[in-house]
Image (cartoon, rainbow, N blue to C red; front, side, top):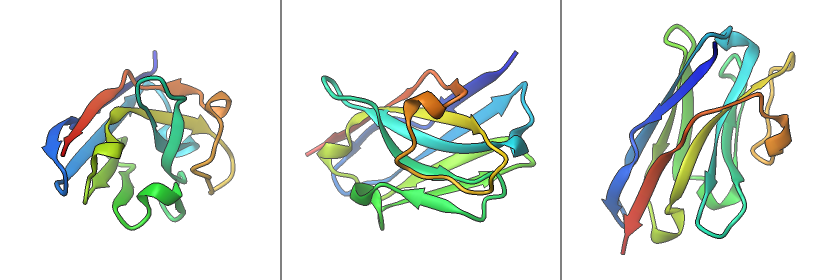
Length: 128
């Protein structure tokens, strides 16, 4: 049984930082590109960032480039999202995503239909 569990969300002031973590179990972690989506109230779920199975390749949506950093530790089956310089527009539910792929690449514009497993989400709220 596959489980994907996020943690690290919370309330932060504009300009602050948060670090999200996502741990997956029940799957061969190295077989999966991992990443993060977010969904604000009334909006569609959108890709934020992704990292290839080796960790050598990453991609970011334009609106988080230079502020967010994704990384993974395959020994711990965990992916991280370091979020700096947060602003109120970053307020959303953040979802961890896993896509099984033979390619050591990923795109932050990946479709929700490409995702094999989702976490339950962790709320990030940025106050102004």
